[in-house]
Image (cartoon, rainbow, N blue to C red; front, side, top):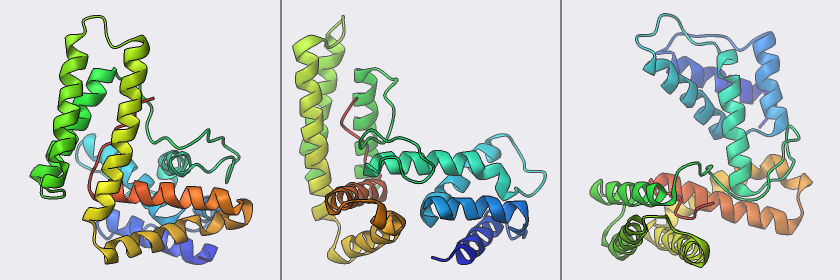
Length: 234
């Protein structure tokens, strides 16, 4: 996508978020958004960053004035960094470092992580996003949660390492099942979106790195589409 087109798409999206109020992406704002395009920020990643700012803005109470794109800069770059880490892109764009695929920091306890994972899977099942093929996985995680809660001193040593390994495998199993749940057309759409997202990085990556990033990005799309949690921890 050309930089000018990228900026027009951002301007249009910002207009929708501002309930139709047009805030032009010109002058310094154009330079700002152009910088996102030059770094390789995918359009949907930029949208997610804008959404994050608006969500926080709405929580502050009734809006008083339209939001300028400049206010969304930090959130857009934060989401971009999270996306790069999720797909395993190292040192791309603004020179930041990504030390491998991970999509969230784990400052919470392991039992709390398990509790949230079970709750999110159960919510996805209740909403109809996933079906009974996830029942066994939910039961398995619920059992792990009960075991973790039963250990007063927490899960430590070999027991913790074993649990982390099981969660890693459970995450892979969940994504494999999710891929089977989605129809062929949906998977083709996701693959096409990922191709577009990674287009800015093709010349900077080896074929192996690009293939790995593509697989990771497809998994992230599948996870988001079905509102699935990240089961691995750490």
